[in-house]
Image (tube, rainbow, N blue to C red; front, side):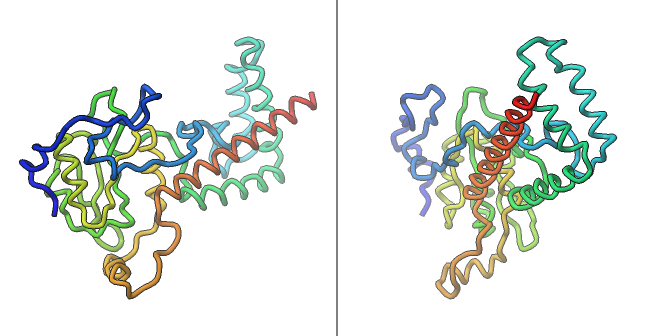
Length: 275
């Protein structure tokens, strides 16, 4: 059973720093340590940096050669080394490589298919803008946030009942699921109690820096019918289908972004060597 407010408040409230060597470490209450989870190996790919040539030029995948030429000219006017100095040389090489790939109909089509396939696999076709979905109401210095794995939520409403300022019920194709829509709109004690009240442990404390990629990954995760989830928990069905774990999906998206960045870096290096 979840503790009452009085019971929870009577516990020690000193915080535990998850990483004492890092000034931006996650600071957790003792009760929250077991509910902390993070995306491994983010490697600096949590920002909305371009990871393919379409993103680099700010174009849709269905663009034509005229749009490519216009975008290239627009960017080179503000990023050419003759204008902004030697610091822009790597970007200029990269833009030239992007233009060479996308200005040709055959190479653009082949590249488009590869990029669209990767995007559909990992993010449902939309681009990652690096911005969280939930509203941030906490202090700028706060380094942790709340995240709900909606794919395992059973819609019990316990968290919404206890911390209505933080959680809301949202409708999907199967049933209502809980979602954190406002970060730090309740006291930390209230949020922690709501986390502990979840009967299926689908609410986590996460790094604030990883919140955007997790919420983004959650959009593409499958949701099972809640009745089927109940049967699965009772042991009457096999394991859950793949593609519904937002933490694993976030790591896959980051891997794709890393590989995409490596691709355009390699292309830039090749183009630079050809000049």
